[in-house]
Length: 133
Image (cartoon, rainbow, N blue to C red; front, side, top):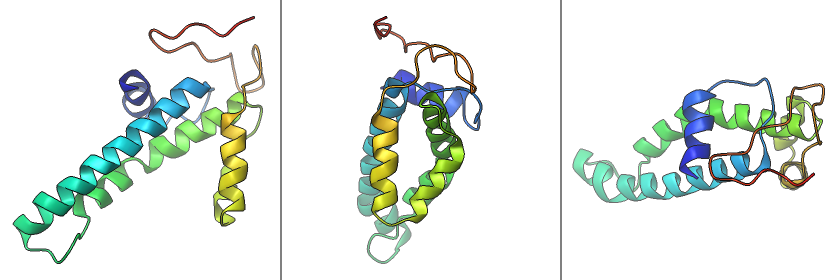
């Protein structure tokens, strides 16, 4: 999980070219989810009371969200590339619910074997077994 997050955020912060495997993408999603929980708790119990902000203002959450827009778009684009689709498919986010479901299915599917028009197949993450075949 840490390796996928580090790879997506630090090494490939705004890299839209190439491909991302399922493991890299889903470990990144899990890391962002857990980080959001921690930041929301910090907002609610530390930042808002210390700054005298009403309720849960979400200052840290807003900063985290802004910082993760580019890597989120980039890793989703690379994940779609792995399935043979362009990053423009992310515009499906604009369709409430159905767009999310379609993108969820696209990102969950196995990537194309071998190289495709977006580059070579992604390498396994540290400690991950290579895909069969």
